[in-house]
Amino acid sequence: MTIEIVRTTHPKPKPDPNNLVFGTVFTDHMFVMDYSEEKGWHDPKIVPYGPIEIEPANMTLHYGQTVFEGMKAYKTEDGEVLLYRPYENMKRINRSNDRLCIPEIDVDACVEYLKELIRLEKDWIPEGKGTSLYIRPFIFATDNHLGVRPSHTYKFMIILSPVGAYYKEGLNPVKIYVEPSYVRAVRGGIGYAKTAGNYAASIKAQMDAAKKGYTQVLWLDGVHRKYIEEVGTMNVFFKIDGEIVTPMLNGSILAGITRDSAIQVLKSWGMTVTERELSIQEVYDAHAAGKLEEVFGTGTAAVISPVGELNWDGNVITINDGKIGEISSKLYDTITGIQSGKIEDTFGFVERV
Ligand SMILES: *Cc1c(COP(=O)(O)O)cnc(C)c1O
Image (cartoon, rainbow, N blue to C red; front, top):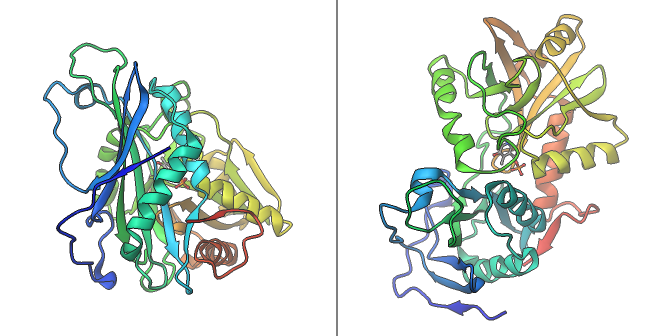
């Protein structure tokens, strides 16, 4: 497939990699492709990064028919560029597409388009430890129409943003608030799709938790308010009495690619990983019995995020004395090592650009 490239005439200065704030700086170019019922996905092109024009009646603004992805590219010490599991992200956008009635994309073609864009923006990939290029593919409805129905036209775009080290002073355990009243998603809803509505639904709880001094909320299931779902934009893992437990994918949880990576790596170490229903009560009971050894979140942004404190209805527990657990730390080193090409990839996770 041929892809048209229109280069910018005004390249921007590169930001200082030591002062990057996540999601604030974008590279010189972006990828755009259109969909219509007659032509399918067509006209893939790379153009200068910049504003796009939409009408006030754009359906996405009113009904939220849109999906996105989040992934990263890394520069190795020898200047090679590695993508982390890009096919998994493109497959997941198709699962989100299916739920939102957005036409399927061609996974292989889209990974090729992404590689083309990254090759053009190679100099934007920061080089320091822990830095990367964040990749945001997204699709949105472009019909101008009021009234709920699937759009007949869509845009697929990819924008890129250089990101600094998530942990400047080493892995830092976070404090998590167990959300007692709001819910993020329910089975049968759109919880497993990476789509705007899920995040809009989460903001209020996030703001309330922040006011109380907590970094993120831990979501409980929408029906019983009992079973653990996930943390903010991360999946969550518990080490209880030597065993790793994580909530099973039940339709309301996002199937994280870092979650899947963590499971594969933990199993390769001979650890038992169980995906099942896990209640917040069970976690508190395990803590009371001295068996809750570690808690950590997994997601593209932080990779591994150790949890040092949980607050459930005013009952505050400290995990592993508020320090980083051995498994969290080893997982972080292993996955980031594979991502940056420092550790041999025996899992087939990285893709050369
Ligand atoms: C993106 C996301 C995750 C993590 O997925 P990764 O593929 O590991 O980045 C977890 N939960 C939610 C709600 C998310 O949006």
